[in-house]
Length: 382
Image 1: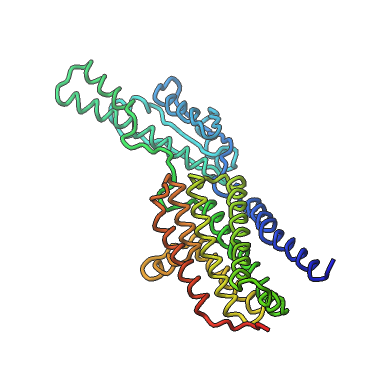
Image 2 (image 1 turned 90 degrees about the vertical axis):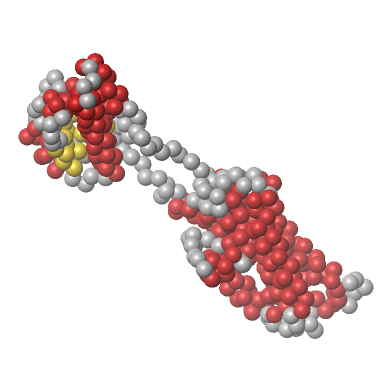
């Protein structure tokens, strides 16, 4: 086997490792670092409660706490004097002291105070309990106010009682439901996956460019041009190999990110169109670098700078929000357009909805491809 063939095989294997396997490994490491950071887990808590005996409204208040489904709540009846010590020692996440005559005062519309004591080291669970207690007491107060208002206008006793029950049991006027991410927006995990895919794409397609520069320096390119083939086929073959590797690498990264970070980018055919478009833009950019760089070292430095700058602007490390001129410049970045388009597809958008970002990436590819033909070749051609 000739030495040149051996070097070529080693180079091909290195391209495969650097272009696909290394990015997937880094994606796995990022998943280990960031996993579990989005949604904190709520643990079991204890509530120390002192309530008057045979007070139905006070019993209803405590029963509501035990019905919370997001985490386990244990209500321990204690004496009023023991509530604060238990909370201050951390044995109880929340202390509640319901005064004597609580139910009668609420029914009569008289002011009454429920004492709440946050436990030592109280966390998110205690905040939830406080909101529940305040919500239940406000609902009770609303029922009492409605009852007194009905009596004031002369409603019969049966009607007054019915009004009070309906108000006290009425659902909230404003409710919230879990929804999907808004159009053109990705959550932090999905933004990281999309940005990292764009970042590594710029490195991956650059391998073919660096190989072209190396062959130019070593004289291999000159010997190829001396053969009876059109010179454009040589560069075209390098561009095609870089493009195919870029598409494969990006699809692998998006798939790995989808599985590891549990994100969904929407319609797979539309995502494929986005990948084909952004790889075309990245490949055309790298061939401008090949024309401008004199040596492989210069090409490698330029490739790294462009990849990091465009990758960071596209959200590879953290989401970037900008307005005015800065937003316009970011829109010219193919990685940013790729990330924005994935946000559209993740929100349920189709091919027509991503026409703008796709057009921007294809226009970027066309302009840079033309520029790569017009820029003088500064490399060694001998």
